[in-house]
Image (tube, rainbow, N blue to C red; front, side, top):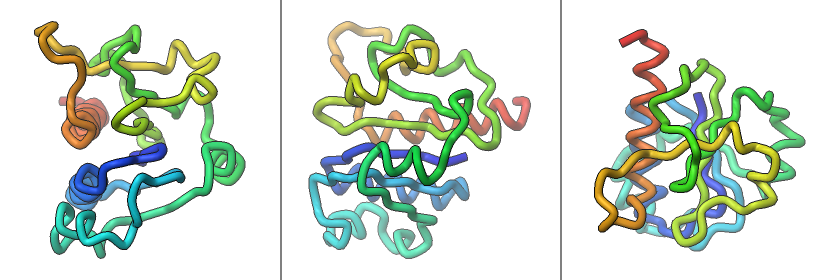
Length: 152
């Protein structure tokens, strides 16, 4: 499985997600533009001493990522608060790409166009919360995806 961040803006979130990727032995794919420098201390601080172990791949754009990786459509899972399906629904294959957008805007309509059946949400019970922290959502989704692979 791979965790994909498209245009991440907050270094602390990226660092925390990198740490989760190390813990779960997942590749972290970052797609530019970033809202920070990849060398920033904030990323390293959030990922603590684990950042050097992150299996990191970087791409200049979503199109470059698609052209280089050629992920099958059925391996792409997009996570947005407006997703019609719960992230509990799918059985995630080992080659899944778990795709998350930037903190302020999510994923662009260009990326999501024609992918309605591939967009999932993390349910929230309270209407008082508009959205969840990206690092928390990515970690939650990654563990759920792994759980479905382990049959538990």
